[in-house]
Amino acid sequence: MMDANDVRPVGVFDSGVGGLSVLRCMREELPNEDFLYVADSGYAPYGDKLAEYIEKRAFTITQFLIKEGAKAIVVACNTATAVAIAKLRSAFDIPIIGMEPGVKPAIAATQCKVVGIMATTETLKSEKFRLLVNRFCNDCTIVTQACPGLVEQVERFDLEGKKTCELLKRYVGELLEKGVDIIVLGCTHYPFLSGIIQKIAGNGVKVIDTGVAVAREVRRRLEAAGILDDRLKVGMERFWTSGDLNNVQIIIRQLWKGDAIVRPLPQGQMIVN
Ligand code: DGL
Image 1: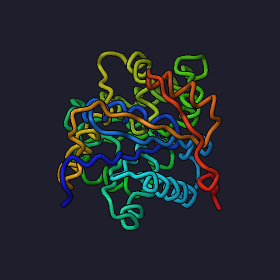
Image 2 (image 1 turned 120 degrees about the horizontal axis):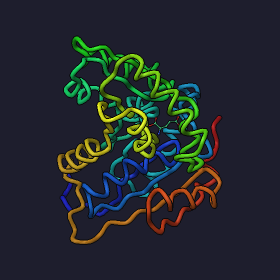
Image 3 (image 1 turned 90 degrees about the vertical axis):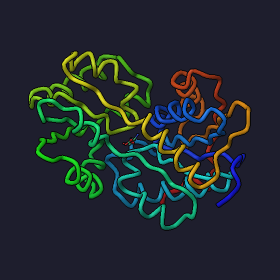
């Protein structure tokens, strides 16, 4: 076990800007930590790519973050977690924390025993998701809804335009027709759409996001490994992207609500072969 007060940063990545919904929860939970964030927007969306492609991106970015000094990695992407986290954990000897759709809290909260999950196609078809549902669903019905196109809308910072609203009406409508009283946001891009999702779903439906729970888990894991940064200072963030630099910087600044400086991911990290 290492000493507490470990000043090294925590590395975080997502297929794009969605992981900022997790980063903001971690910033609240861990005000002293420094974070490195990679928005892999040049390769987004992951959710309709082959597993090998996503694994390669996850490996490349994890290696980059470790090279930049990361003491732990947060895979702030449900899709990359579902596809690649087991292999990342066996390849890298630092804490690696991932996302998973909040099936367990949803089952605990449902009154009518019908729960809806919005996620990417790749997350929903993963073995990890199947096991999660089998483990926690009890006597409840789990209705899954793949949501192609939504990640792209958030990547464009189109959070309430016509196309975004049409997609959401369709996807949320499908779940409402099946009688759900809980909707789980199983993709880290979707919390940026939660206001509209809630509006479409109505007050009788609870919308669940796992960002806060994951931030607490990150704290627990850092504490357990003795690598928490408990210096009395305000932590900082550094951002990189594989996408269009100006564009992503503008979007990160809007979503992060801060003066983020975004740097290009170095060329060596831009290849999928
Ligand atoms: N934010 C990612 C997730 O949580 C989106 C994946 C994608 O790019 O399709 O699944």
